[in-house]
Amino acid sequence: MKYFYLAILSCFLLSCASIPSSTVTLTKEVIKEADNMHQLNVSLVNKLFDERKEKINLFIENKYTPTLLKKFEGLLPDSLDYKKELPNILSSIVPVINRKKDSLQSVLNSQRQDILNQLNSNYSDYSKATTSLQNLINSAVKIKTKESDALYAIDQLTGDKINIQKVENTINQSIDKTGNALNKLITIEKVITEK
Image 1 (cartoon, rainbow, N blue to C red):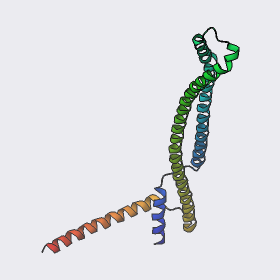
Image 2: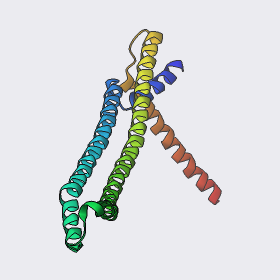
Image 3: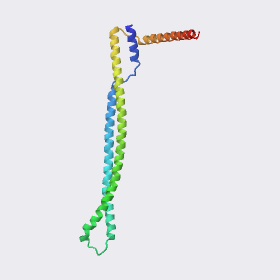
């Protein structure tokens, strides 16, 4: 009877999927690389938007401000003393320039945040999935290790190799015979209960 239980346990263990233990290390490295890639993506997005912010600043300084100054200069009367009125002129022009700059940078910051939010959301989903996968792989490897330990223990107990295929065939034949006998009993029971 002891051998029968050992054979059933062996069949169960041999039916499990085989995953090499190196898979655990490999998936950990893939997850680590994905973490690095996410940080790289965030850095690249920030760098891209910092470059765009700098371009906005250059545009404001080199194109928008000179054009705006020329426009205001054309509106000023010829009789105006520019040196005396320069502080007043600047106080009316600078807020316009700053509003334009703030408006452009606000749009840029909003776009940056939208992209970063999407990146982080995608990474969070990926991270949850890889954590689940890693847990499954760890469990499968533990099962494989326990299977190997159990088979070694069986070999130590029996002193010789068990023919697992023969044991499996015997168990299947016993199950088939039991199933046939139960079918016959059910048929007999139906006949008896009908009378």
